[in-house]
Image 1: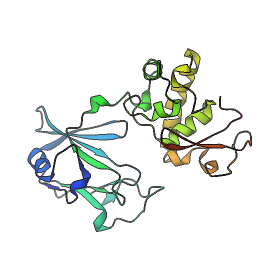
Image 2 (image 1 turned 90 degrees about the vertical axis):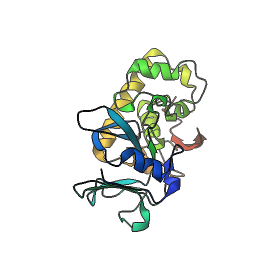
Image 3 (image 1 turned 90 degrees about the horizontal axis):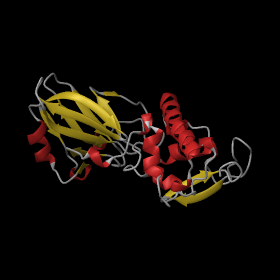
Length: 244
């Protein structure tokens, strides 16, 4: 890798700065790419050698990855399809003239050198019931708030959790630790299936509940007027009839 371009200091998280990123990454090779929850990690080092540094990328609601001038995702539901120069928050330049750029109009994402991924919970994509049970055990926190806690389960956001709980018929305000074994099994399966299905459709905004998530919206399943509440600091929609 030949160049680090980090014009926006605020976009660099974890206490590092542009100089630290350049020192750690320039001259290194990307030897691996992995993901845990919402965190994408690029492993840097020399081919055949140990990993020297890790660059963590987070995209928030409005960040997109542009590789060699090709946007990996053409448009986000809550962002713009444009790529304005002032939205280029971070970039890597490679020896073969290739580039990797994060475009983020609202600066909701960020980059971090050597992020501590041990602080994240198990990935929602392949969440096991035993892992979910450990995340919920003994908690009097609202179920939705617990599922949004990235330290407990990594990768779930506001729309996804509303969709999952609506599908399985669980009240988002219910105490997380109150679920019995059968409910935990059903929830773990619903998380895996819903994450996979909505990823295939193109994002969490493609859920079956999504269009009804408005003031005065009705449940797409039974027509009941949806409850609108704030749970875990997030606007929450649920059906008072079938979510218990």
